[in-house]
Length: 105
Length: 105
Length: 105
Length: 105
Image (tube, each protein chain N blue to C red):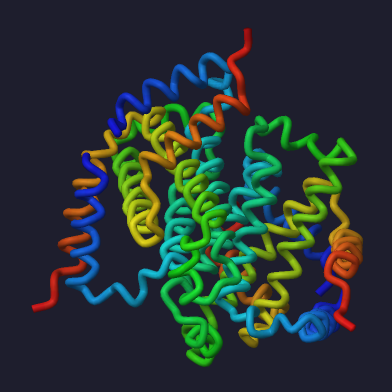
């Protein structure tokens, strides 16, 4: 999956539906959070152990997949609208994480 | 960015730090939601118009980039732990969206 | 509304339905966040101005009211399960806020 | 704690700080969700069992109390700005819950 191609296609998808006025970074961030909550809701009442095997159930797995996709779709659109290069941001954040959490000796 | 390579590297990163017991799907979904909220917090008191230009400020842009990366990092780990093929899930969800929101004539 | 009476009644409601094993503070905090997201979802694509008048529509107002209630119901249960005295916590937090944001002269 | 008195005092607190333009229902709902996420963050990596005893630690208990208060403070302000009578909304939602989840025989 090429994220830049995805961004271009989602931008066109939004333009075709006259959604751009709604797609401010603020609204996209809010929608992303709502989708993240829908993803969390799947696991809400499960024990940790149940959550580990939840995706063995095909219906649950499809639901998780749909919510994972929703989060990603809003994330790449938000990055597009704020000029964030996702790969660069991920590389920089991973560097920070490596320094913050050094590998134990 | 190859998502599968990223997943493999993040899995090793977690193993090296003895995090796997904490990385249940439930906990990863919760952490993802918390990061999504931190991303939304950036835009919380902005007007829609201010959110559009927020990333012109370098410090704000770095903060947005960091939070975007955090969301993506938890998302790919959650997908890894639930056996979700992200590309497939995104393709299926985009098909659903195309049917749900047909292009106006 | 007496919050302590409400807590006692909700505890009994949960016991009658055999929910206590699910009502850990962690799960209640997660459920609270999910309800807060459902409340935010109401306003997600609105302009600020539209959100100001949203509750003039009776159906929207009922939806907001239901979500406000859901958030409060989980909040008082979480407080109950963590031994938090809500009134005391609110008083202390308001004191902190008064010091953090002094009234402009 | 009288919720209506609290609402009146918070309204004055906001006016004194010139916050009303920021306190649209949309922004308050977003702030509420962010605070709910901060509350969930406390329990994020805990096991269910650890979350049950988390508030035995005084520092953790203070943190939980502060976040519980933050959620409540935004909730009553959101209710104030949308004309929601919280007590009425809670009573109606509890009726719905009683019908939705009847007491097992």
